[in-house]
Length: 399
Image (cartoon, rainbow, N blue to C red; front, side, top):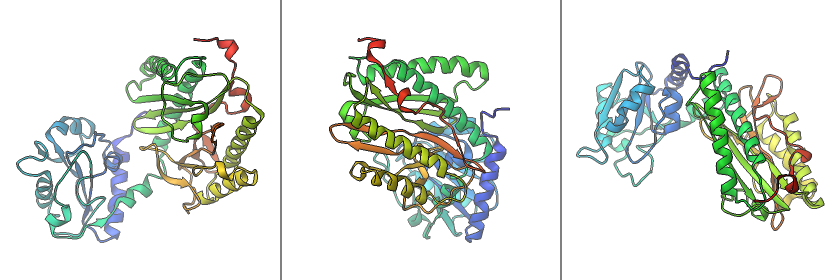
């Protein structure tokens, strides 16, 4: 049976794991300000602005939260199990929100005890200003963001089900995007209708399968020589014969991200482009064989990059070979020579080797994969061979 949401028992399990680490560090509790960490522990998703929002997780006892008035209903609808909240009206307010937080800590008997925090007060967003939390408590706060960041690296069975669902829709969205390519149409005028088509199908299927409203998608691509800039923004450039087309499609299920990228060609690619494409394809295939429990992230990156360098493409490499995905589209661990993380079953990563040749174009495939007990599982099932990536302009016509 497919699971489409996180049961509160899983949230409580996560909270208890954090409590154990806090106790081992001699802390009476922790305050979390980062919206993703709060979501991971509570399922409460919010738009982080200048208004501080904080989760207090004591080592013993129930969690509590401080939110502005405009978030009160959202909080209780998403985390109805939460027993204690402190609501302030606005920022900066007659009384600054940080003073409300200190009062909540006092009510919970934590204000004078050793505490951890993932930040010393609210994040630096939207012209926020205010006192450091440590100055109001007259205490040093121990950093604890690493506790959750380490936990989030290994996904539960429920999280993996959500990521499979996310990956399924990333792939379906890419089908619409690739089918929509047409000579003379701009990147935006192709991507937007393709995304709408995918949304229309998503709404129909999601409604019948019982997950309406919890899945989102994104479709975009870049074209021509500008694809040699790995993070070039989508624009209004018309698609032309001979173009490289480097796509970026996302699926998002209950906040869990997958990504799918492909290098396509609008018309028959040159021999040089075929050679660059094939090396990226081979590097990704190499990674698929390397990724398994017990292998270090650094080793995957080093072997893939060494392969590309030995093929003569050192000058065309702009980034490492992948990164973690989950509640953020970029999170740890990283397929990078500087990341010693040992892969474990349940970790979810992008595998995205890329080569970038100025004046020629960019070449990048990205798939989201989950590490299994014996190897890995591709969560974004989509063709990746050269013959599947060539679009015939004469078959589809012009705009």
